[in-house]
Length: 460
Image (cartoon, rainbow, N blue to C red; front, side, top):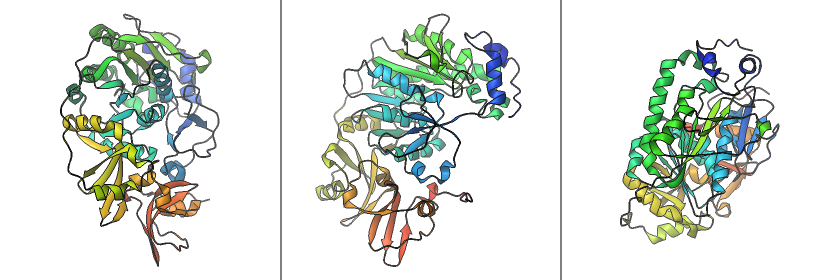
């Protein structure tokens, strides 16, 4: 194993934390590898080989070895997401706070969402009539977030690219807000030893200030009695328990205790001043990396969300809408709108929320992009292929072997005999990978260029 040289003062700063076992912590870094884990997509069931369940997440599983996910077609089909096990604890928090929900649809904001691990987790945990807004502050990280949500296949998500302060325009809009805050990253030392070179007490203090600013900016968007989930991949007290004390002191938030089991190895903490509950994950105690997570409830009254008369989008041709609807299962459940030449669909109950968000935020993606109409024919979008709502009875389908699927994902010529003509879903083990156009003498591969596999396949 690699020799870990922890930053000066780092271990000493942890000695004061309750239930921190220095020798065990160091040994886990020096002598045990970071475990590989993934979370299955409940909307795209498939047979996957696993090595035990992540105890705090119903859909999380460990793997014996780390396979080449790049060359697994089921990964590209969105059947699972490769995610660090500790971060799946957000599922345990969501399930606990949902128990007290009266069944009304909720709106959830994932504020710092890229690349999409926690957003796909939230999307699995909420109901179909709930809405998830996945926001990424850094513009260059938004495409990866969109791609991962596209693979997940649902139509109750909106992706935005905004600064936290922009959400101040939406007072009381969200029932739950997750802030997986930018941090000093010490929880990832085992997985990324190079991060040790970036760690310093000065950087911890800088992150603490940034975390306060982000939380203060987004706080107005949380409704009264709404829940704030706060997490970092840091062990530093300043970025964790001190932030909880600050939230309770400045905003009079109420700490929520999350049920855990002793055998999980999670360390439950109390902040020194306000006695707010927090949850620490230490390698050596848990089968995962470093994490801190907490949940708080907003008690003060919030201004009403902005109200306005809904502005119609454009006048939409009813004939075009009818052509689009035949490609969607239960088509009356969706609201259809047109952006440039592209048709999109989102769950009908979210139309008003979409209108509100479009007025106040920069929206990158909403619902599912269906495609473009050329006369009476649809040029289908890649998002439609991966959507769980596509009416597969209305399109051709071509089943691929593993070798053919990899050829398709590399945008190569596919060695296959065809008899049909037209747009076809290209499937692997019953799950769609994308589109191809079947022609009399060739197959045109329409897998997106920006998503194609560039690496060479492993030699078997």
